Length: 52
Image (cartoon, rainbow, N blue to C red; front, side, top):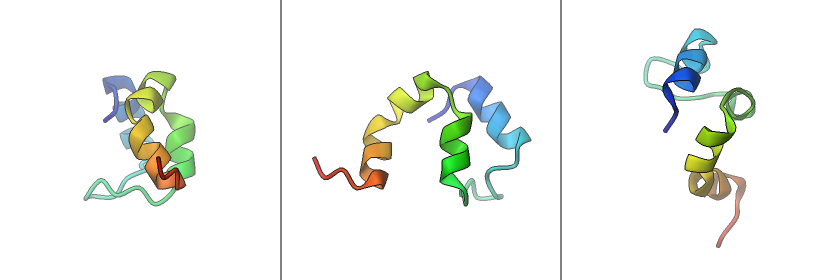
């Protein structure tokens, strides 16, 4: 989930394909704001291998 500003930036930078699949997740996480990072923290932790 992204805020409107981050979503617009991700689309403008073409970080996703037509199915909204991100090939460079590091660039995505560098692009989104702290608020979006906090909203997505459980997903980010899971992707990073945190098994809590």
